Length: 198
Image (cartoon, rainbow, N blue to C red; front, side, top):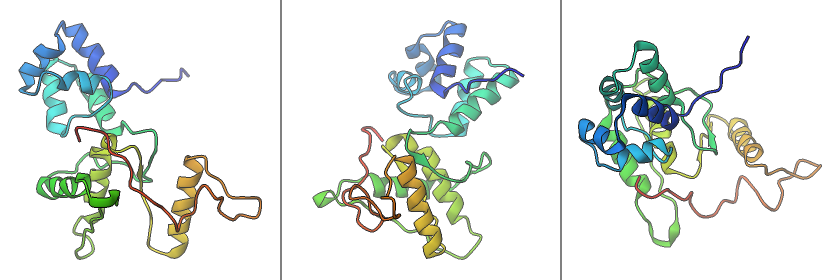
């Protein structure tokens, strides 16, 4: 069986756009977005903000059903190099735009002293807190240099999350399992850098 290489959203968009004979600027005009938007998507700097926009792209590019699904899936699974989220994105997530925008505004804002912002989603079980956090993580993944999901149900799950992150970043403890001087789950300074324009 042949091995299939996953194609990034930007690469797919470029292939489909070129095949249709559209310039980046012309496609942006059709979509009603800034003229540089298509270029940033094709370079992988950002992703479209909604499923509806990806579907409109597919419509404007006259994609066949399987190509539309391929483009949509690529937009849902494109990740930054340091992306540790153990759950898949929910392709059926809808609504909650105001909450997502508020989270993004709060988390992306500059803060005195370079300290990171924190936000908490609260509510009864089953109202969608995890789904909102998950959608935020995927939707804005390319706005951050790293995205890490911490399971904090127990001390053990939290420590396990930190270990998984350390492994992903190539940070390891000494032979006795103690954290190295380069990383300690209990002493973190600074905030993750954000990429401009998010």
